[in-house]
Length: 102
Image (cartoon, rainbow, N blue to C red; front, side, top):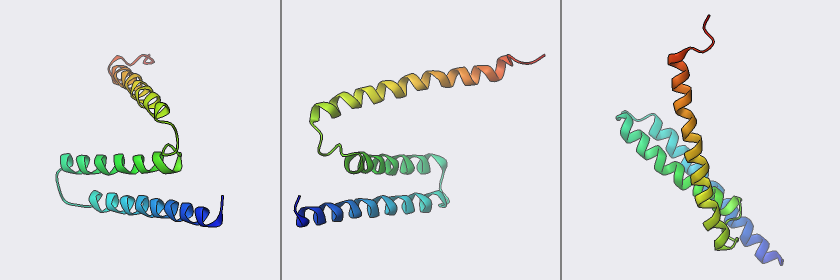
């Protein structure tokens, strides 16, 4: 790779890094706002989705991968998250059953 391509690549990564830092600062500002929990949750969730999208696209190099890999990984990630969600019910069930109580 020539030096100008390397410089533009480095500039792009620095811009993405600064954007992620700005999003983090926005999340801190939102956390200290005096608004109801639902609005804080929605704003934080939207910013986290944008932040994760930037990180996956640029720092995990999904931008340069073939589209078929992304189309495979997205349903796989949704499946894993759905299966992880199944275990939350077990954790709440254990609170009521007290399996190790004597």
